[in-house]
Length: 341
Image 1 (cartoon, helix red, strand yellow):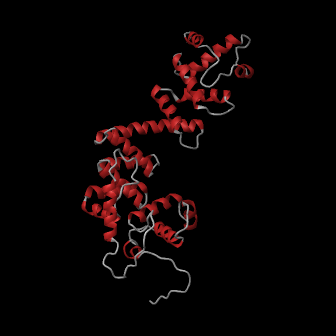
Image 2 (image 1 turned 45 degrees about the horizontal axis):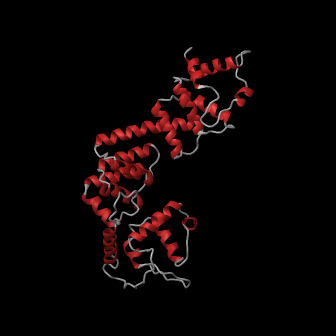
Image 3 (image 1 turned 60 degrees about the vertical axis):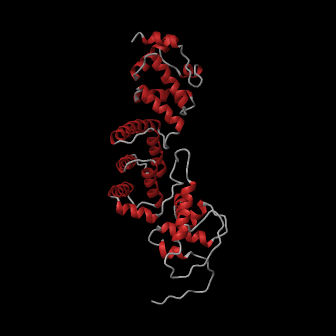
């Protein structure tokens, strides 16, 4: 089949891309590279590249890191040297030298929080997969959990957890399964847990299993709280700290639901975690552990303030609206009322 090149504008594509990386690079990585090469010398944002290439923004960062690691792209200006077609391996020596230099310079004093600085060539990953059955099983399990062929970033992350953090393939597989069950199969989330395990010296099968059980129970409680509060996004770190504290204190969902109602009544129909936490704190101090106890206490409290009918009125509740984390009733009166039940 004869193919001829039409006249028009051209841009440089490294010989190594066609000769060595067509099998290793993903479809998105190749599209992103071609767009970047076509706009050489221009300042491009990830969002612009993603839009023009029809890919997700997070794939842009991954692709650029991949092409930098295989020495096709660089953060620094480089002198382009033509390579004669037919060379045995035009980039192997340069890639090897770059990788070794990076390895020498990467001697962190503390644990790397992410795999971003971890360098490993795709060919090396493939060799490890072929030579180590445990690594092969880990990668196979990862692809099953992810539901797709692993990206370079995902594979690099797994090798980083194993080689750098010291997690066994078995521990990593358990981590992958947990993240899949939580519908959070994301590199950053998995690495966050892996770093925590490393710092807390959670390494054995039993230790990993116990920590996953703890996280599963906590996530279940958090999920129910999110549903109760009609939250569409994951809690912030501060909000999660409140939720974790309520779980540790043994606060029931029914009691939290009542505190949620009280919070919205006094906060212009808004959810304020600090205010809600204050309600729960006062109830605990008074020995209230159930919704029925809290409602009975309310009825007695308002019956004393409003002898006629003993019902809480809107004017009463707004007139006595407390500040954040505070309540209109006196704690000692609160406890005295509870002694009646």
